[in-house]
Image (tube, rainbow, N blue to C red; front, side):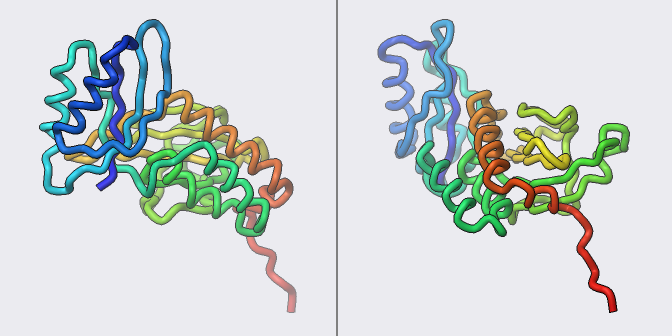
Amino acid sequence: MLLRVRVTLPDRPGTLGQVARTLGVSGADIVQVVVLERLGGRAVDDFTVVWPGAARVERLLAGLAAIPGVRVDGVWRAIGAPTTTGQDAELLAQVAANPADGLATLVDAVPGLLAADWAVAAVVPVDWASRTGGGGATVGHASWRAPVPLRLPEVTPLRGRSMTTPDGTHHAVAPFGRAGLVLVVAREHSETLSAAAFHSTEVDRLTQLVRACAVILGDRLDLVGAPPVVAGP
């Protein structure tokens, strides 16, 4: 299976090589490395690896923990192939080519782009924050792994950010800037794997995608969640 491994490590020569060797010795086949952050002598890297399904992840975690200064921030299952920023442009092209299904195209694609479990576009009413449990939000479109019934995290005020709910689920939120429409992406906690929270660079990427789609789709977004028009007799 495909795993995403997020590691914080000292930003000095040799440390990245130690991490890569440890991943290989543990049985992981590295297919992509993405540097999320380099600041104050530390780096945050995402490794996408092919992991033998029968192997225990504990061996991998123990090996990484033995490297001085290295911290594992999360290990979780990734959906689809490793992604690049070039795929963002391809997604926007698909949205522009078929705007009638543009919102659904975005929602269905985002989990794969951000190694998340599911995504949903929801319309949040003005008084949503005063309602218990996020009641009253209308689901415009949900990806195939979204839970039913859907319970949204506290998304107001509507701005791009990450958050973690008490059950351990990590969320990234990005508003479309009109009609109370917001995109929520989630990584769920499991018994065997523990996902990392959404990094600020991932939130920025999501926010840029949502803003671009808002420009492309325009007034179509105002119709999301609106009751259907019933023709008269």
